[in-house]
Image 1 (cartoon, one colour):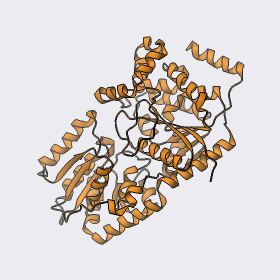
Image 2 (cartoon, helix red, strand yellow):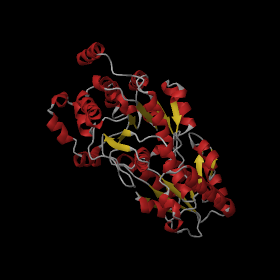
Image 3 (cartoon, one colour):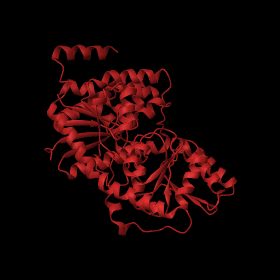
Length: 458
């Protein structure tokens, strides 16, 4: 077993939303702590939300209010530190996030580019504050960033101490591709400058490792694949998973209600499914976080189902907590989240399989790789409601095959995709990185002074 490490893990909060990256980072941090490692899970932008025990620190760096104001109002770039700290209170950030936060790429393109520029961006105070804390009393063995978009401060950290830095790649390209030009091209240029300062990368699937190596220009051998894992303890205790299924075939959707997750594709497929022999009584249950920016989208889907005469055939459960998630999965026969983007992880697939629920997922992104390894589901042509409906019918009609798929997937996740295995693989990689040493040691004093002078002139 690797020696205990002191790990600073920086995770990006999602403005009050329970997101897959936050869940992954919190689960991983908890599992690393259980293995004996000293882990500080540090929120950036906003506090994180998770349906498990939250092990993140109460202090937020790169506070969303400060970052936004420093981008838009020059005066805030020179405020005293005591006022900056007041604006970083977690309760205040949560309050602001719940009112009018905008995290779509188009709304924050300038801010994204500025953050990637690190000390040369408008948030220089925030970069220095984070670097001072990381290189002060904390003194970690290794620093992990939850995505490349948050790593603009790495050059400043590298100026201050020789510590390895690792970046987890988990959906970065989806956000980057949403940036308008010229911000998209400029952001890629800034990221490529950072790559040489980063000591290693982690991806949760071979698909995403290959894709990001090509997209960002990262040497493929520098990306370690650590398969995604989940906390399986609730799922492993079968007695706690109540069997709420009825004789009515039920399809579930468990993800945020967002066009990228493909709820509209599933709704169209459900309308077609109900017209197929044997599926006249099928039901659809929808659970997940719904942000203000997507309420019109969701309501349009619900109205379309009602107009098709299916108002009584679907149920919008809303956001669910941990117990609600387990109950939801226990009440459905098959899960489908037909994403329109190429999903790099598929956390909801692992959760469904852990509960013994088979899945029907699009044949792109990480899904083919995950289902080839774990079993437990079938694939459909992406964004093809007709083919999705046909696949759903196949799974729902054949009870024997459905139960076999569910049990195969459940066994595979409980034994091979649990949180402990994910933490062990992560710790092994981080240990190798630490033993190898930082690829970018602190700059000599004269060179550092030159870089600082150049940054101050911008």
